Amino acid sequence: MANVQQTLTDQQVKMLMRQLRRIATALEDPRPTAISKEPSLPAAARNLDYLALRQLMGRARPEGVPNTLVSVGRKKTAGGPRAKATISVGPLPDGAAGLAVFTRPGEPDEVLPLAGHPTPYAIKTGATDYTLSTVTNDQAITRLEFRRSDGFPLALGPRLPAAV
Image (tube, rainbow, N blue to C red):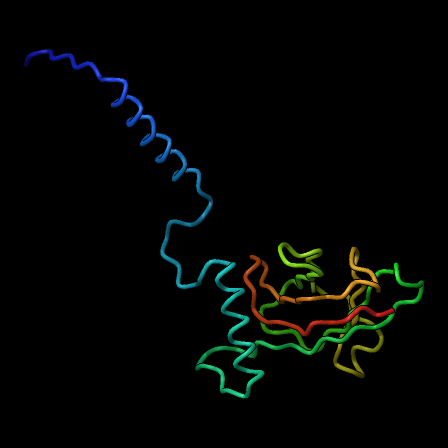
């Protein structure tokens, strides 16, 4: 076998480095490589909007799709407009582990864990009160997303005006 040495041009080296960086980036990607039947989280949130709108318009839910709307109310917390807000959540959707609370577009202001914080009124009304840690009485809640433990959105709550 003959020992053949090949020299690479600058352009070939640059192309090789680009390909190696692309491979390294693909290997560092935290997304699972297995094919998932679930959409990405942003796509799931948009799909949830569509399903909730269908339900609000009186259309039947597609087969196998759970209820996408949850009963949520807001209570005025004592302490003035800057006091932490309190919301009252009706029966939770199956699999809900957290509630993402939005006061503006983008990332949620707060993701509230829903693991038991029952109030004395929960038995009578079927609702549980939660005091938020960052959202205050004077802030309107523009979006509520009930999420699984992995952050996947399951259902929506209503927009809640400021409680001042």
